[in-house]
Image (cartoon, rainbow, N blue to C red; front, side, top):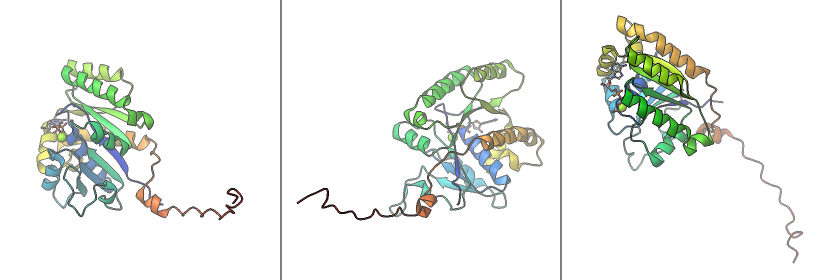
Length: 252
Ligand SMILES: Nc1ncnc2c1ncn2[C@@H]1O[C@H](COP(=O)(O)OP(=O)(O)OP(=O)(O)O)[C@@H](O)[C@H]1O
Ligand SMILES: [Mg+2]
């Protein structure tokens, strides 16, 4: 049976922490492994959608799903129906203002949650609160799933880096990757690329070990058992109950 696509949500209530950067680079890392990947842009700012328009057709394919767009009257809102049938991984670029039903629907559709965090005191505080809210969220508690924190824009061996790593060490969720503060991410974003695409760039190659680390962590998480559209269609119909003599229980 076709296994369901793994859905990886990149989210944090704090703006500018690197959600789009991580989501686009993660999608590229999967595409470069030969995996059928879709990047879902859930943000009305449409940054991932813009990134996808810059991506060259000769590079490994990342399918874009512009979830923030209102579907036309002939399209369904359910993204089950909008994903290509052979999709293996969906990376969701979540937006910082996802609240209420929006957030609930994102959490329901997610197998793995990644929370990027910057090493500033303001970001650490906001990110810590976001994680605490997430872990106590009704939908999360009803079906807990792996959450990993990503230290983003780090400058190794600085005090701010140490502070962030100390903070991450005190959290209930693991720190699963660290990405440097490097102009290569800005260059990659402009070109519709990810650092894993940029094999000839030394600064990009420095980052690949951490992308491998992140993919390995994701691979190591047990896939959630979910009911897929395909599995619903393939399930044999339950045998219809034998007609019983109802007169026995309803005497005239
Ligand atoms: N590791 C990094 N090194 C250098 N620049 C980075 C890095 N990560 C992100 N940036 C830059 O920081 C800015 C914000 O990043 P990004 O747009 O990914 O954040 P975001 O969380 O998606 O923001 P928003 O909340 O507005 O959607 C961008 O200009 C991006 O290029
Ligand atoms: Mg963004």
